[in-house]
Image (cartoon, rainbow, N blue to C red):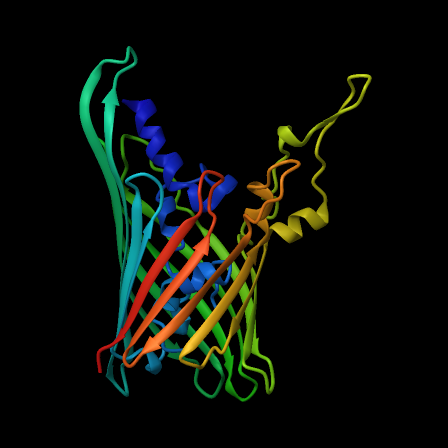
Length: 337
């Protein structure tokens, strides 16, 4: 049963590629928002109506999110699916805005086998996190600080675990220039109860980003630097080794620039304040880790759009998180006012 349990962990690492395996609850870093995915993922500088942005940076919680409900869904691989739901409510002018969110992943049903191949019955697994968030403006400045508090529950076959975490965010919002800058520390926490006997680390992540609407042009560009808590996130790929006619093997070399690039995500959103949006993104780490030798690959490229119908916004994104297949992400944002 333990080897099969490992399969769950491997599946949950799909969106984290080679950074997986360092911590538990990897589903906390999955990208389920179509807007996020289309822009390359982990965009932490969207300060607008979208309550999904608060799941990635709680400092972005603001009055424009009042009574906005967002629901996202991803059909990943086989029976595996995951998604999020988020809602913001402005209690009053003093308390400002409270935010609540749910992140979940369902791994479906598996046919259990022991070491000799005998059937042990079906089993499944699922994980979920409930978050509550709040942000405040630093008096007399354009800085905002926010925090999400998360309760985490995980069930993998016959094993279960409960944990807790917080996200801490800082956003600089200069409205005159339509310029935003942010830094966020995600998943600071611990397991309250482990799966077996060993307490595991949570997938701590530090991201920073900037974005701005181009003056007199309806385009917002995004630049994000992910996983700053770990500088060396590049791994030598044995499949990219070169063997000459004499049998000498030259391994892939990972230099300074390779590591910098792997921390970088770029995105562009056309008509960011309009009723119709077009989004493009490029995730350099995903591109490198899913790149196939001698074959054209668009693994790091993502795209999507958003359309507003009265009080409903429909969002879609196309992105590749693994080498097996691409993912289609769907989301709906509803104005409940």
